[in-house]
Length: 145
Image (tube, rainbow, N blue to C red; front, side, top):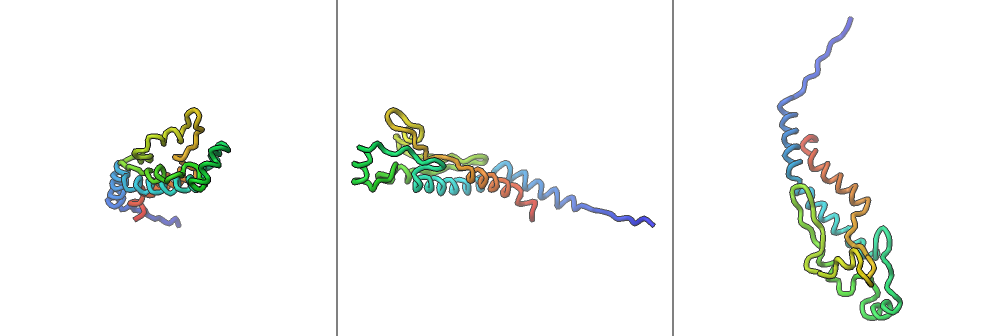
């Protein structure tokens, strides 16, 4: 004897969850704020390591001797103002991370004769993965309730 079974979906509840996920997909700002904080920590780690994933070009010997005595020898950290100026602004589908009011920051980021590039605003591979997970978790959270 064949047995029968029936599967029912709670359609109203499912549709409510899908609508909530769609609303979240249009305004992801809370998740992008978290991504901004994540990036600030990542940039701090880049400054602490003096470059990630690759170390920054060291100072010329004459510069190193002079700056080590004055500033403790940390590249791009003479006064700490550039690192302290880094902030973010989140929107519904993005986060902008950058310096605020430091005109020489671009020179250090991309280089300019005779200053070599020492990129400090770098999205690391682990940052990309973490940010993708933040956004996906944010959008799909209503589906897990």
